[in-house]
Length: 256
Figure 1: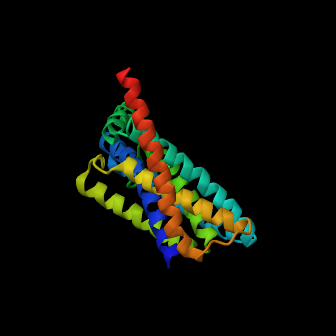
Figure 2: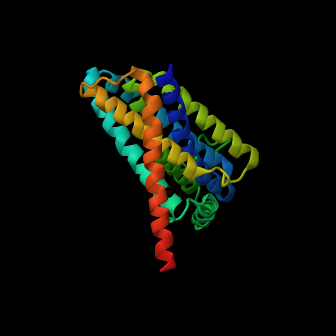
Figure 3: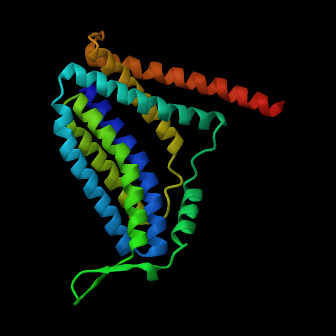
């Protein structure tokens, strides 16, 4: 139960963070290029991602269990440490915070560089469906690139615990929640504490990576799944300590 709870929360939060970034792109393209082509592009990208999960999920799950745990543990460690590194640098002042409003303005400027006159048409002569190729491409690329990381997280979490369905449900819930919020306010979710979320997700991914990687190598954790209740706070304490040390170092450098 403990492992499933951590798995769901990790997949949900990680997917949510990535989808907030995808939403910013979709909103900017939709406002400047029109919603029809934008939504078609986003939907096409979502379909591609779903097909990737459907194809790779069974293939990854078919690997020997111990090998799978080592591979999954390694991938989660790579993702977790990468997210933690960025979150720690932003929290300590060495890296600028992720600004969804600034990204939204930049995407607006990029999407406005070409006019909808460049749109292509498709369909029968009667009731032709006009599609803005440039808007379609921007939305498709944005959702696909952000979604690929979600796919990797879903596959690694799901395959590592033979809970691909649970990980997929968590990701789907995050996508639907972010999409509903975006549709309701029609603005970037700038108030979402993205760096805090990335910090939390990085901690959970790192903890799971250590847990599954060690299990795949033959280690046995005291208390089995309950070891995660200790491992997660330990990783969090380590990350918070690094953040405090780097923040002090940054403040000292500014004072000098």
